[in-house]
Amino acid sequence: MAPGTLYAYFKLCFLVYSIINTINPSKTTLADCLISSNGIISSRLAGKLRYLDSREDEQIRGITMKSSAISLHFEKGDEEYLINLIDSPGHVDFSSEVSTAVRLCDGCIIVVDAVEGVCPQTQAVLRQAWLENIRPVLVINKIDRLIVELKFTPQEAYMHLKNILEQVNAVTGTLFTSKVLEERAEKETEIASDSAPGDQIYDWSAGLEDTDDSHLYFSPDHGNVVFASAIDGWGFGIEHFAKLYSQKMGIKPAVLLKTLWGDYYLNTKAKKIMKGDQSKGKKPLFVQLVLDNIWSLYESVMKRDKEKIEKIVTSLGLKIGPRESRHADPKVHLNAICSQWLPISEAVLSMVCNKLPSPLDITAERVEKLMCVGARTFDSLPPETQELKSAFLKCSSEVTAPVIVFVSKMFPVDAKTLPQNKPRWGMVPFVISLEMRTDFASFIVAVFLPSACHVGLSTAW
Image 1 (cartoon, one colour):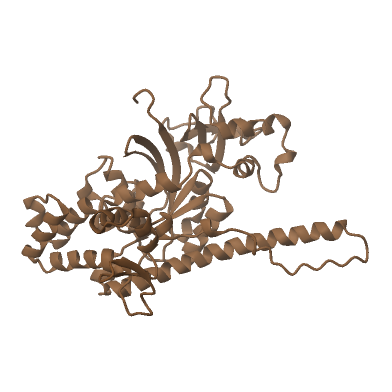
Image 2 (image 1 turned 120 degrees about the vertical axis):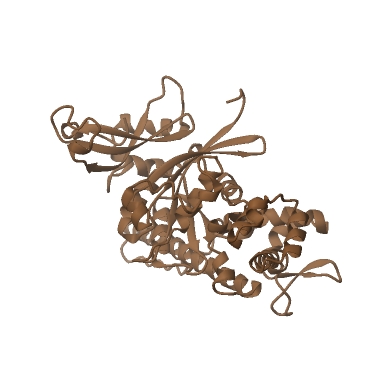
């Protein structure tokens, strides 16, 4: 690391829905794409290797069963980031793995299938993220299926994607409303207990009128949504096209960022962006400037229109090797073009660095929640333990700073499965998943302890 270089550290996990008894590899395919950006695996193997599905039964069944972690390096301009990624299972049968991973994270990525939309497991992971008070971002994956399988037009795809976003935001809105109403009920109880007998207090407000919840929702113009096809290696946020078209059209990027998604269209005669596309029968700006181009590329490659493909590749300034362009499978050629034009790793990791907080930004409320077990309150902890709160918030690397270890999961392991083949102390050991926070970083470690050591083990050392 060069002197003076700023490293921002994040820990996040993939949260994804799945359909019961259905194999859905979109999340792990996305993880493969992010891993290939670090040169750990070949980009050609992304989606096929399923790198983080390291267990034999995971590879055989084609689903993630245990959480796996990996560290990724990402450069954005002059800044460098270290992202600790946890790929957690999406199947409902392994939801305990998701709960454990969420507790270790500072943010999460929700992956939704563009065809299936919001499912019960999507709602479950959104609720888990809400309860753990971690910030989510959204990836709408498998958009290629709208083109190749469902044969949607760009306009139909736009309306479908818009409906998915509304469904996800409806779940978020329900969670927010429940929280506000619970707080209001608690406040009313306190007022009723303090008021004199016979006093009547009428408050017709629901507590939602003065509360700003705009930051909670997913919207492409907020930069917390990425549209992607992990299997074809592409993904984008609308800020990418806002920068691209601002140079061509002479419109400020900030204006395009606000109008690329929503009820806006381009008036070519007046050379202005205007509101009310549906009422005037116009194409939305997102369809006209984004989806039409992607649909045109897919159509050209699938039909093997060489002249049009060469024109597109030249206009985008890409270099496609003869191996990919002559391959019998048009998907290989398509992947080579899309992964250079709209690299999915760039879109997702940029969103993570821009929108998800670093460990230094952890809230005091979340620290207190992590340090307490069950229904125990922070004020009931010993004074020595309460003093660790400030150290938790600072993530200091000083020699005098305490090391804080968070026990996220504990489970028994057969002694025969250990590397040494037998217990060190002649007792059945346990494996504990831990998180250590120090020097802006979060690390996951495994510690082997005998069962006798459980007495006196606390969440903060």
